[in-house]
Amino acid sequence: MSRVLGTRRFSGAVDTNDGDGRVTCPRMTISRYPIAVLVSGSGSNLQAIIDAADQPGYAAKPVVVISDRADVKALDRATTAEIATEVVSWSDFDDRISFTAAVCDAATRHGARALILAGFMRVLAPVAIERFPTRIVNVHPALLPAFPGAHAVRETLAHGVTVTGVTVHFVDEEVDHGPIIYQEAVPVFPDEMHGHSRHGDAMGKGLSHSMGAWEGGK
Image (cartoon, rainbow, N blue to C red):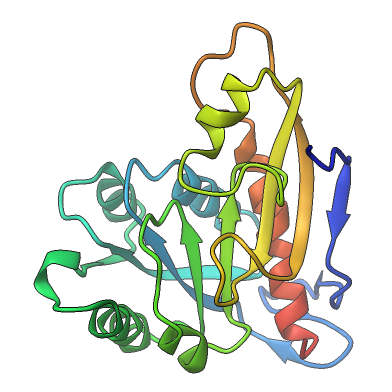
């Protein structure tokens, strides 16, 4: 059953703001970390990232939003936030390797140094890990290892759990698997029928911790 816990964090470097918009940590000083956000749907996770990135001192900066579908609201959210967009359609490629290479190429064109899978419904080929080693993070709307897969929210509600949550983790070659950066529990209210908008705050915190891990050389 679920590992129900309040907060679990990857022990990376701690970020501080030195007041001029740059992020400092014990091992280096950099400008905001450029990320590519990969999406497939409405972009609720993307919106949480956009909102977090508007806060002073937030360590990440979305430089491009990449979707595998052209007709999704997430792209509208990105346009409203003045973030570049790219569509890499699954149907345009013969196999997962070439699709993944195109996604990585799109991210690289915009200067992204990391990939954030925020409601991205495609499984990337291992070439993505080769091109962005320890620089791919997945946002999952459950407390992994409980409820992996594409229908985590629906399954948590169907099982009648009273606490679900958010897991932010580094991506490895297994689906919804890899070192956990951050977990936070989110209560499920009795009348809740769909998703959990309260996931957004927890996700923003988790991504902040991933920035700290990268900056600390992890």
